[in-house]
Length: 197
Image 1 (cartoon, rainbow, N blue to C red):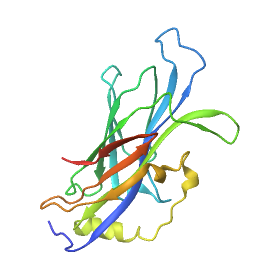
Image 2: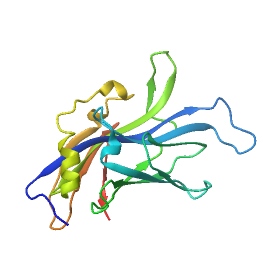
Image 3: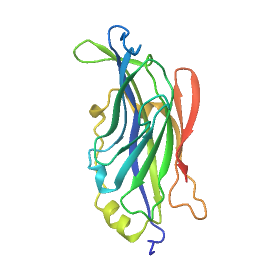
C-alpha cells in the first residue's frame, strides 16, 4: 500500500444535531421532540468524494440502533424524549484509511436559535477537522482536487467556529490522521475528539 510521504490534508467538518418540540407529548410512545443528527462538510463540497459511509450508533432503546448512511446527506432523523450520547464513525472511500470516531451528546432543549421566520429550534453544531497524514495514493488524488474550497457559514444555524477555542493536531507513529478540539459551551469548557480505531 503506497502512501504519499510528507503530505497532510485537512478536511473541516461540522457535526451535531438539530431538534424541535412536537407541540405535546405523543400518547403512543411519550416522545416530545423530533431531532436530526448529522455530519456535513464545512466547505461547500461533495463529501462522498472522500467519505464512503457514516455510522450513527443511537441509544439501545431505538429499533435498529446502529444506522449506516452511505450517501449524503449523512444524517439520521428520529423522535424521542431524552438526551443521550451518539457514536459517529466515519469511513473513507479508501478502505486502507482507518475510520475515525467522534461522540456527540444529543441536545433537545438547549442551545436554542431563532430562525428567519421567527420560530425557534435547538441547534448544537460543532466544528472539527479530519487530518490525513501521509494518505494513500488514491486518497491523495481525491483530496488534492478538493483543496481551495470556500466555506459557506450560512449553511449552518450557528457560528460553529465560535465553539472551537483551541484547534491543533499531533502526529503519531502509525496513525494516518488524528484530530483534537476543545469547544466553549456557555461557561463550561468541554473536550471531545476523534479517535483512531
